[in-house]
Each structure stands twice: as C-alpha cells, then as structure tokens.
Image (cartoon, rainbow, N blue to C red; front, side, top):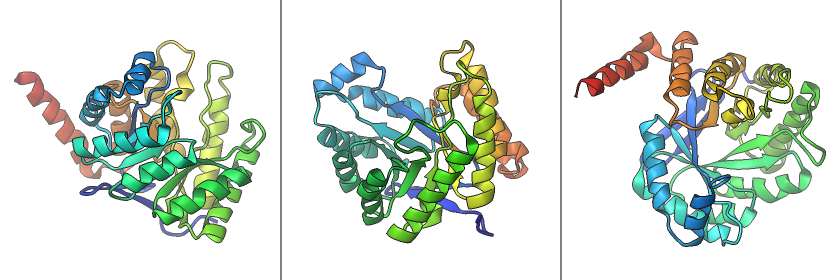
Length: 293
C-alpha cells in the first residue's frame, strides 16, 4: 500500500543534495554521458580520450540537469575501470549527484567505490538473479535503485503485469534486503509510440497505479516515447507533463533541449511544485538578461 507521507528519494554528491518526490520539483537526470549510438565517442573512450565527457557535463548542467546519468558501456573496453574513471572525472567537473548506469555488476561496484555521496543505481529488473546480484550492492553502498518491472519474458505490455512485478520488486527489496521503499525508483517502461500509439495510455495507467498502490518515485528514458517519429522534441515536451500528472517524478532525458525542459518547468508550476512560480519567473528573468548582454 502507498504510505501516508510522500516518499522522498534523497541523492547526494559531496556537496549537494537532490530530492526526488511527488511533492517537489520534477528531477531532470541528464542522459548525455552515454556512448550508445555515438560511434566517435565510443572510439575516443577506447583510446582513453575522455574530453567529450567534459563537454557533455557542461551542456547538461547548463541545460538544467539536477543529476547526471553516467554510462560507459563500450564494447572492447574494461567497463569497470572506464566507469570509475568517468565518475571520478564528472565529480571533478560539477557538484551534481550521479546516476551510475550499467548492467555489469563489477562496473557498478567500481563506480560506487569511487563515488562520493549517495548515488542512484541504474538499474535492476524483477528477475530473481538480477535482484540477488544488485540489491546487496545497493544496500552496502547506501544507494537508491532504479528498477524495471520486467522479468525473463519480454517487456510486459499489460498494465496488470507491470504493477504485479513492481509489487514483487518492492517486496523483495524492502523485506529481503532492508532497502527503504523511498529508495526504490520504478521505471514504468515508456515504450515508443511509433509502432503503437496506445502504449502511452498503458504507461500512464501503470504510473497512476504505482503511485497510488506503492507511493514510490518513478523515472524513465523520456526520449524513448518518440523514437521513430518526426518532431520528437514536441512529442517529448507534450508527453512529459502528461506523465507528470500520472505520477512520474523524474526522467532520464537530454537537458540540451530547452523546449522539453521548459515544458517540464511549466508543468511544475501548474502542479504546485514551484511555489508562487518563483523558479519559473527567475529563469525567465535570467534568460532575458542573457539575451541583452
């Protein structure tokens, strides 16, 4: 059952705290430090050149990221070593908390061992063997975890199955590993609408039920929804506020897209998460001043 008090997922860098919650501002997790689909970046990383990470950190921070997702999944590299190096570099470049993103347990261990703060680990599924491998690591390092409600079968298209698997994840994490419910962030699985526009309706239903039944925070790869469609920024900028009203509290997204970021900030105002619209007004004034210099 959903707890009476809103659950707050607290992340920290060495000097900054970020809270993901249903009663607070939407959390933007910058997705750019990820070599997937970036051939040149992959080769640079193989060659030991991390300079692109510096540029990506700068652009994501300037775009308004609250947290940075760091993924170093590059074939033909030592991922644990590379991820540890990247996290060390990102901590030198900015003070944002980090979301440590890997499917390799040894890489997660390496990343967590050099991280100064309270990380978000991306991610775990509802598969028994993955839960057994990753949840003890999360508990040991006092991190929070992103969990996806899919198991050995393909991603479930039915809302009931995703909610059922969410229940399993929450039960196992809290009862078997002593992880606080507030530290479980569920990815409700946002599917591309290019093949089937009804998939978003299912995802919105899943979000509402997870929020109402478990009260946990949620995140997703926001750009997934528009994959294969034209006008992706407009689609993403429309979908995110709709998802926010259904219970989404954060998203892994490219904060270099002002149109999408501003749509989220505007939704925060209407949802009562930006008191008196002060953050919106301050951002508007800052933009005006920047355009006059």
